[in-house]
Image 1: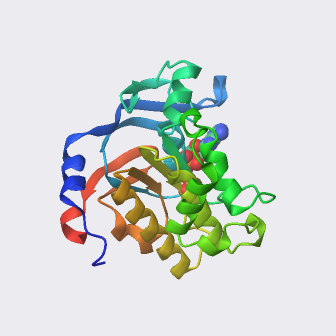
Image 2: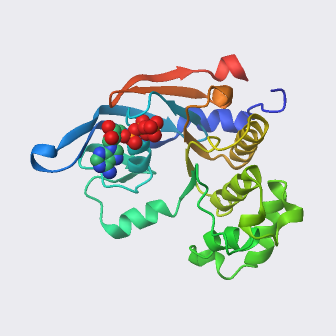
Image 3: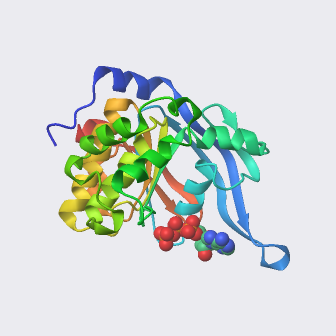
Length: 249
Ligand SMILES: Nc1ncnc2c1ncn2[C@@H]1O[C@H](COP(=O)(O)OP(=O)(O)OP(=O)(O)O)[C@@H](O)[C@H]1O
């Protein structure tokens, strides 16, 4: 991929700033005799600007870990720091502040089908007080242009193809310039070409904006966009970092 090269600045960011630090993290589901441990002693550090892929068999705990890292679930045991904020025992207010700095992209894109592409992207801006004074329509349109949907701005989400919907979801996740983007199987519902286009777009925008990406995937076709690949099995991080930076870029 010749056009996916790291800039000196992004290489420097990768080597200097941790945005996610996990230490001895355990997680359980259920109560009483049904209580079951699903994450075991997870230790992990992810640095600014890194693109990390999380892979492993079904049921190994990838989504559970991703939702914990996104502040969508409370950390119960161990330490989990996101952008310097300890999430274990954090107040609702602290969790909300962290969430505002994270963009989420899911397999089922979760667009509002009765809103247009522009309105879906704009909605994400409306969650940020400081953006309310700006021309949010213009910002949303400019972001849609960046993902190649300048001619689909006023289309309702339900009238877009799978790949186009996922690109709207990317625009929505990135428009507020989050520090971290978490993506759960973003290519699962897409054909080979659309899946490839979507991840290459995520890669390009993330490197331009210095965003850290953690992406859960079963899709072997996209492993080469990673700076690092993590592998999970039975709730454990078996491999906490095959560094592929030198290999791929
Ligand atoms: N809300 C829940 N309540 C109880 N158990 C759960 C819950 N969510 C997940 N689990 C269990 O936790 C384990 C890890 O699930 P998780 O969804 O994190 O795995 P995964 O690696 O993301 O799987 P997949 O690749 O199939 O999406 C599984 O055994 C699952 O059954």
